[in-house]
Image 1: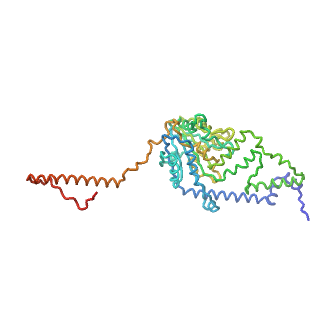
Image 2: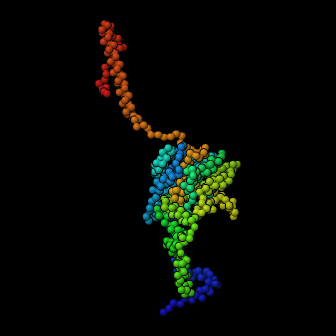
Image 3: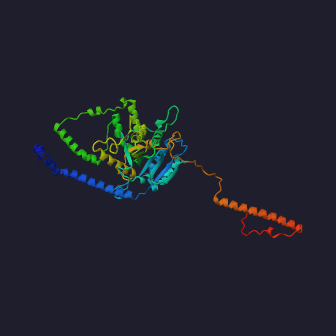
Length: 484
């Protein structure tokens, strides 16, 4: 008994009315795909709700970090700090994620220029404050960390605004995040061994901000999984001409079902014999690669060998209408970030979904919408980031290259620095209780000396038969007088 499918009649129906064809496919099993997407959408709505409830109970604190006045360290010190902070990464089971709404913790690293006054900030949950202070003091003992009021509390405004204008964007990577950017070891002069601090360019740009202007630079970082670098293996194999084997998720398999069915039908219809040409086409290219191509593969492996952080990078320039100059944001600030670009690897570029520039269709309405959206995302920091939208990945070396304390050679005049150098107290410094005891002993010694001298005077008066005056008489010492 065979099953006959009249393909010609189905094709004829689809040509006359394609909706009939779609309805037939839906009745013959296509509804399963719609059911899958419906369940998936409900799951995402529930996940967003339960994570919002989880985040609602978090309490945050904004910490101002004063730059050490005589900082001679390279960004390696901040790199060690990020290694320390990566310890907050947690692993959640099914109930933690879908019932409790647990999410990874994030930090917000910020550098702001308030009319040229530059301050380093970090925003964290309250119970991670001790972790932050321990990590920073371990590398910078002379730094000062104090809690400050959130400067964004004064900017609960919407655009267009009668007094202020705004330019803003998010920053993304030009290629896949496995490709590295230029990092701080590349800024060291190989001849003089002098470290050309990449932070100097950004500090000078922020120092150019004048009265009525402000610039806020922000990186929301979230610790990545320890196996994040393993996902770079398909890229590496592709670059060297090896066999690419990519892991497929359940969603990938579902979308590949139609293509797989079509390929099986076409292979059966054409009955094309298999060939062994694939092995010759996938010949390893490593021996024929140029040195530059080999260096790229080496740099990718080197990047993936370090701890990684997801990053959402954004900055905002806001100023009064009479002094607003978007060139300072779109050219000067962004130009300072371009020093980390590598034309042969990776580079920073504005994210077109958030960039408040180059808008043509319905420009005015879309510009207003983007300005308010960017302001809301900047104010929320990582509070509203979805669990699968933490951003691209930079390792600790790349992250420390972009955000670190400038060294002594940086001459930006209005960077907030520590006023004095801290030092440990001397080991022989007496405690308060010891000081009180010594003072009491000293008073007793003086009283004993005075009493002894008066006794000698009394004896002399007896010898001279002179009367003893009352004011020279001394009272006896109390019974509870402490002895030395």
